[in-house]
Image (cartoon, rainbow, N blue to C red; front, side, top):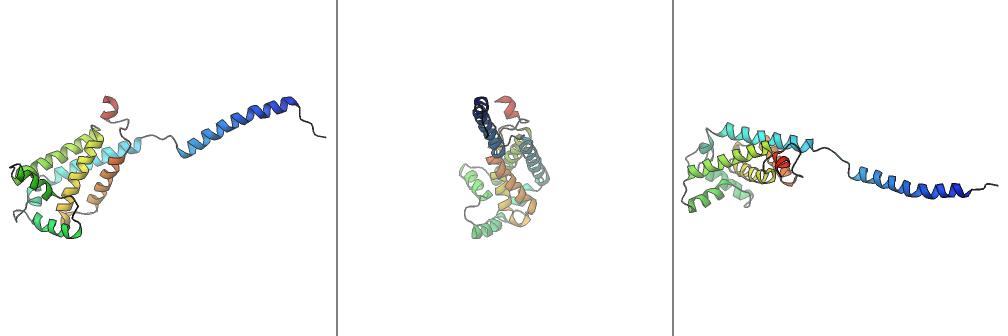
Length: 183
């Protein structure tokens, strides 16, 4: 006949809470693994560089690319009319230019301001300074540029727009950003 001593029963009762604690830890580790935020730093720095290089590569031709009323290579008005046929709510430079004209600013000044804002947002992303705000500004302005220059865009522009949107919802700040050190 099998007998169980009281010392075996007390060990069994002590083991159950320990076992439950270990099971809870294993479950939490499985569902919510602790991982580094290196992926976020790589994405932020890479997209910051991409936005900066986009701005620098288009600087000489920025006004010709996005000028309206036939002043550019391809009229922005024509490209935005084609975009309006597809989607009325896609952001475009026409929106910013109409706001600028209401404020009494010329088209060249507004386009230059947009270029500087996009470059500044890219630099802030690269450094990790006001990451989420910079990502929102860079995403919006880059989407305006891609939408307004529709026939001149290619796949990398789409990936940049998608990546910038990911940065908007990303868990900022990462450990290598200035935001982490300052705030």
